[in-house]
Length: 220
Image (cartoon, rainbow, N blue to C red; front, side, top):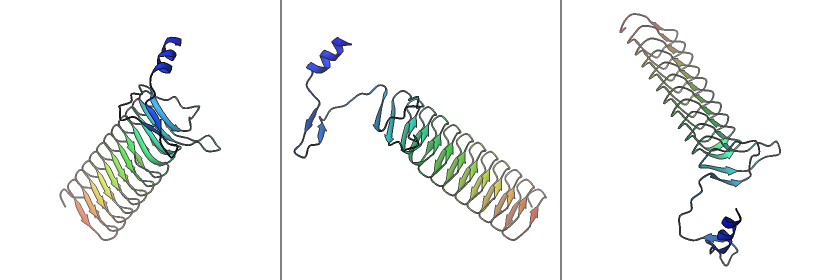
């Protein structure tokens, strides 16, 4: 350690101070094998390898914690615990799935492998490769599923999608609900386009708007 310290002390500094008092780095590459913390260090964070944390800690001890390998945590009170996971803004967000990401918002969680949440509040992407884009309290739990905005929507089937609206659910594989409220597409490749309290229970069925409609027959 003493030898390393002497070598560092004897080496020319890679920084110079400019006329305004800013330290400016030389135009060279810098290598940090363990990681970088800009702002405050979070004492109870088990920092991972090759990580980057940017942010401050509040009076309650809430700060950013990139504990996954090669993870990144910006914003405030965010956690990137999955390997290669990123949280790039917002407050109290968590990216726990490997290679998952959360981009802003509040209280969002991306726990599925390569899942993502883009803003909004209280959204969850737990399926493999799932995504939630904005809105509030939406959930994409099916593998390859997606929810695009709205509130209280759920995409639980594989390859299912919900595009906006309120408390809609796409639970069948390859099912889709586009807007409206309180509608459920539960069968394989079923679809509902808007309306209220509609149900597509048959495979390949579709409902276009209206209220309290049910499609049961095959391809009806």
